[in-house]
Image (cartoon, rainbow, N blue to C red; front, side, top):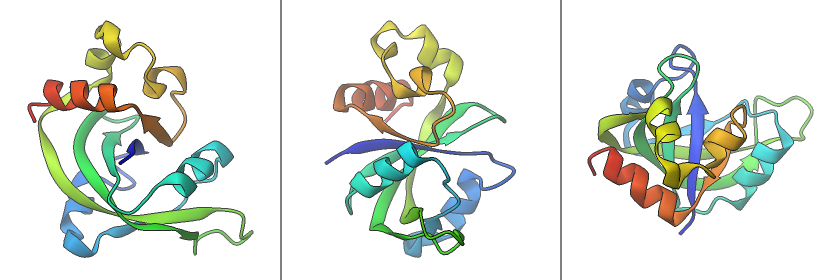
Length: 137
């Protein structure tokens, strides 16, 4: 299994909206960065992703599951980009803030800190375990 982090501004698409989609999930559309696209193309059904509220909140609030592997993004008129379908799995008991991630020396190499604008990022298994612990799960 691979681990990921996906970012969304809560005003555009929040964790609560993702949860409301239930088991059928929702297409993760609108990604227009080639590195993020390549990351989505590596996602496999069953992989897990941290759900990060960017700009507003700046915190990891939940865990989502990849339920459909990449396919052409229907919102992309150029045909260059892809999307995946994700569903909410569970919220973190305690959201893990960007400040908390920055304060944890073991997370210094996390892509969230190195590539702050990248909307779809990889997460190592060690980072995954530590952030889950920090989030109370």
